[in-house]
Amino acid sequence: MIQPLPLFWQRYSCRRFLNTPVPPDFLESILEAARWAPSAGNLQPWRFFLVKNREIQRGLAQAAYGQEFVLEAPAVIVVCALPEVSAKKYGERGRSLYCLQDSAAAVQNILLEAVRLGLASCWVGAFQESAAAQVLGLPSGERPVAIVPLGYPGEPMPQERPRAPLEKIVRRIE
Amino acid sequence: MIQPLPLFWQRYSCRRFLNTPVPPDFLESILEAARWAPSAGNLQPWRFFLVKNREIQRGLAQAAYGQEFVLEAPAVIVVCALPEVSAKKYGERGRSLYCLQDSAAAVQNILLEAVRLGLASCWVGAFQESAAAQVLGLPSGERPVAIVPLGYPGEPMPQERPRAPLEKIVRRIE
Figure 1 (cartoon, rainbow over the protein chains, first blue to last red):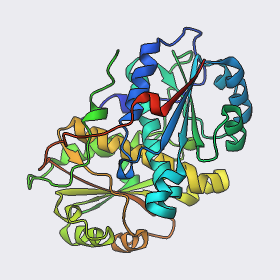
Figure 2 (figure 1 turned 180 degrees about the horizontal axis):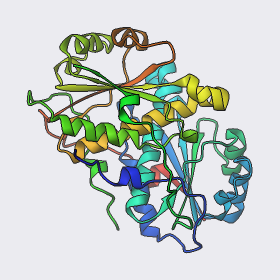
Figure 3 (figure 1 turned 45 degrees about the horizontal axis):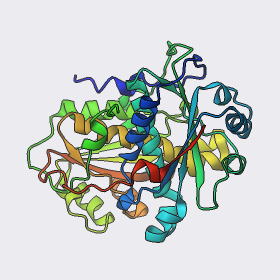
Figure 4 (figure 1 turned 60 degrees about the vertical axis):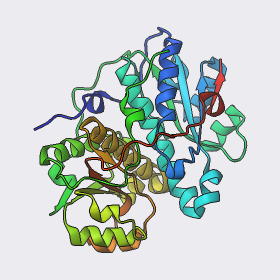
């Protein structure tokens, strides 16, 4: 059995970070990884906010129902989808599916590149979009879809990381 | 400037494949990569169909508005989201956002692991979901969200692969 790239299973949701700042070059590399994500029609229906500002992070943490590690992380990337960009070409399927998939692919690139650089992260999806949009001063066409705190891990990978076995989630048609 | 993992930019949408079969171990490794994708609440709201059957592929190609490379590829993975699994825990946000993001992260892992193994792929989103569901005999709780043909590339990476520069897509708040 071939093993997949270790990055895939090395990624875990980390909710405690060291105070050590993240080197700016690392953040650029992570954003560059996001930039190369695939998107329907190569529309790139996304914007990325790189936040290293305690007041803004406090607002984001509040929008995220008080998840304190959003405030405490040395850096936070907020990924926004641009539904109307996708809708202009693809209609409702662009608005409610493609732009969400595209931006999610970008998030996954962010998480993987962070692991590659020795960082940890957490994909935060539980937040009030309107509150996060207000904190960031988003125009109406930008929808915040993920908040990703980043930093050097302040807690280890959990020992238990349950995943359903392949035979439960894969069906084969030969 | 640090360069991100090359896999991110090496991935491209390939719509022509060699007839060479994909080694079964490669497909298992790709599915294993998908299995390690993150998901909200670790619900893993996904199913993967590994299709190596011309009749089924023909049906999928028809569901995808006649995109012939879905039929011609030596293997196809159809990624399905399970909206009701996510909705049970997270309500409408689970149904219309999380399960789509989670399954998109799994798709991205599939595409990246394929590149790592020297394969090429294409994220096909343009298809009639109801037709694809019928071809696969899906129960009502499974929503096909991506069709991913896989194989050895029969066409090279395009020379032009435009991406907006970081200054256009990133805003920095320090």
